[in-house]
Length: 337
Length: 175
Image 1 (cartoon, rainbow over the protein chains, first blue to last red):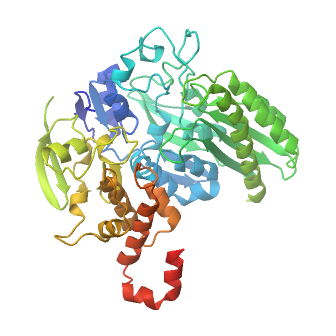
Image 2 (cartoon, chains in turn red, cyan):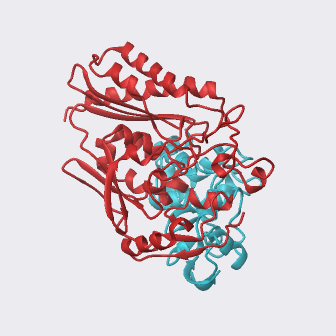
Image 3 (tube, rainbow over the protein chains, first blue to last red):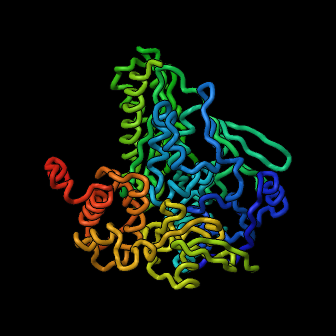
């Protein structure tokens, strides 16, 4: 498959990149690792006139920890996150999420964290070659009027956002910094997502994600990420769960459970958090009940947009949620920092 | 489309080329330079056949713009052998029957090479992780993983004689 014709620009610093973004507007795309964008271009799912390469920028490639806060530049490669020791020791859930992306020989040395977060939502009827899609009507995601993922059609797009890293970051206290020519703004990562399948992100065409900031996780806290996929490498998650738990040694003080790959944005399960917060750390039933509540919440969003049946994926939400909760809890118990 | 200048080192040879921005590294290697040892399987980053080393790290040539490789050192399967002498990896692939149809082999070799450059004595799980992004539809991976382990043994500075003196190492390897 060939790439469509493009103009290619390599800005030397962030300011130049922002100027280019501003002048090209909707007709351009930011090229970081390219492992998502170039496939989409080959399939003619997107045909930007201009590519703005981040290759020569070094402002977005820093990863550092200070005062317990972790700051990751948007263009930091996944391999560099895995190699950064504090991530493995202090944010094991993030380590698991990053490690589970793609495969070492592809995403890890090429893919970036910003690219992973800004990947487009996916659907088995949409992420196909031009030829394949040409046999049917155009779906909503591609600008048409129909949706094949929902039986009987739908008035909106039901694509799934399948980033591995986003659910984990949402479970932790994460803010993201976005820049445009006018300046910088920061927002909680949950506000990055619109929950609209056709356009899953809230940022504007002239904006660029520059940094991910993860707050100190605090003592007696634990993080965990669980992913279900048919292949351990390459595959996107069928369902996934990111968990943050904080205890006082006896009870769970704070809980966050985020389910990934079921909706057009990572899905926060407030019902599960209500069950968990205040319950004793050895309360097995609370874990079971919160995992079940995740399944109930997620069920409403899951449609047949992957090769696996929706019913199976809904059941598996409870399984991955429980695994992630158990893993995060045992880490919280061991973490007496 | 305007063609742009590209300086690139491929298998220790520096090229100065004019390329179109939508040219992938894979197209550059195969079509412009005639290095057809790097194969195109899926063209979407799923199969791993087109893997080459960019500054020592495995990358998908099908998902790398040629211009993004500017200034980099690229190594392809053609650069592995030293004249008539095969790289230990190539030799062990032959010894272990790790090649059947051969389509995935150049990608497997390059990812394995990338691993051995980083870690001279990889554990089994390192080998499995390094090859996890590759698809082989013939051999079933076991022979390939064994060939990489054997190549690591033979090229990690430990000569065959030394291995034989050290019985424990042989036992460990045979497990």
